[in-house]
Length: 472
Image 1 (cartoon, rainbow, N blue to C red):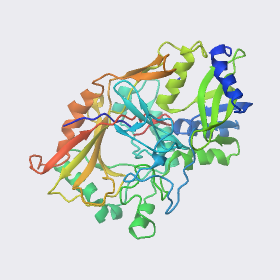
Image 2 (image 1 turned 45 degrees about the vertical axis):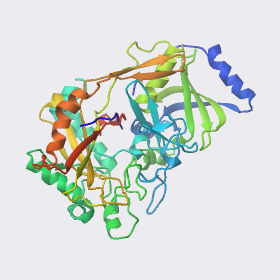
Image 3 (image 1 turned 120 degrees about the vertical axis):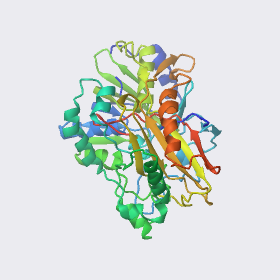
Image 4 (image 1 turned 60 degrees about the horizontal axis):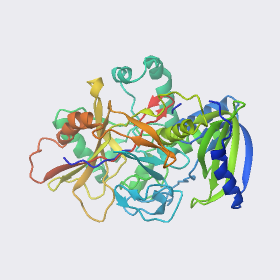
């Protein structure tokens, strides 16, 4: 099997330094206005961490300013909000991204797109941008770990019994988690899902439906011709245009805004954070237009700052703050311990197998191999993107627990923190457990001369908490 690298809340006294103020003064000289604001609480990022925080604070009567660098992605039946995987355009890429995507040049006009590619050492991570964060583009697999797996990998201070009794059910209710109905699975568009389940069972692997934050009635409506295909043709990998996906923007953030105490500021790019001499926090922001042009510099002062910009960008901001003296009492361990879900994508091709030219998604079935909590992993089937021909292929994704960790190190020449990832990171779980199981998921005809599984490993962190629950 060939491998090509994929993947996709961390945690102070420093005055405003001359080095920091110089560029701000220079910007002011170019005519960009500078404004100052004071807020009770500032939350950076509108994904799961930021969305949950904003809602719970608002429910407690605390006003919140929520900063999001991206835009709102409004969906609805027959909307064309999100880009299509088979015909990507400027909406796919964040304007400050590395100019390559999946190893190829990405030539689009600057836009506040969905995905930021962040290049590190042996790792290119993909981070989401937009109100709702990673929930806009993640598959949505909402898996509650078994107790043995949970206790093996989470701190003992977290009580699984309470998580099982309170927090996991709370998340499931909020996201309206459900599995795909049999009526949908039995349709021609979901032949690939049925083939996966059949072959995995024949190989003696556990098979079950995967809980998803989806209103499957939208997919059924597509089959009846009431909406353009979005779920039922595998077109939702970059966001579901028809709606029905219970992402953070339409659940936690919508509920938070309904309190009247949460103000979401879009196109607000945080560039620095620091602790002022009086103990309050300062947040430096570039307010931009949709192309990334800076319209305004802002300095927000707040009593409470919540960093929820994802594992990559939260860490980068804090490591930069520590290295430049903006926050002086951060722990030495800051930047260490970054890990992945060891994701590995497999293209399963078989000229003799009928997967269907049109494959519904996002995910219906999976194989949860959790008997060994130290090496627990899951393999799922996902739809092949819509193309104009029958590729006789479908997609499998394997992910699991990995002991490998990376570290962010400040690069003074670049003025930012850079991730250093071990060259063979995640190889133990991928090659020792996920890889051997993926061919088995194909069934007993693994020697068929027309059958092939190719591994594609794209680096993209998917670390996130569902109110301290785990999702994939």
